[in-house]
Length: 92
Picture 1: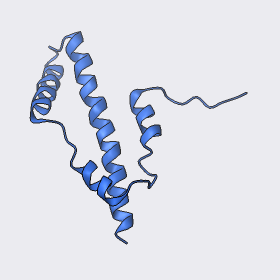
Picture 2 (picture 1 turned 135 degrees about the horizontal axis):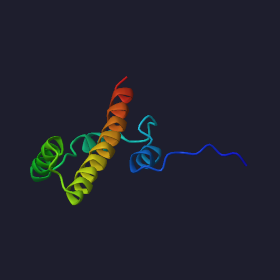
Picture 3 (picture 1 turned 135 degrees about the vertical axis):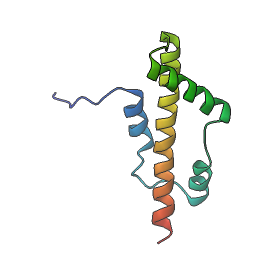
């Protein structure tokens, strides 16, 4: 059997799970998802870690933490893309 290998990164798994281009949300759920955001504390921490990464002073533990923020942020954007598509198509 020749199966095409799919990426196993967290982002690829989220994309296959959420399927942002598939319209399967109701309008109320879509509006609720658009309200999801990182807390100010998490945004500040992610900014601090990103700045440390730019200066080359990030520890290994901090690099893993920053990757977690990136993963969550990307998954959140997949959800929001799906929500926007739902609201856009259901408005017509």
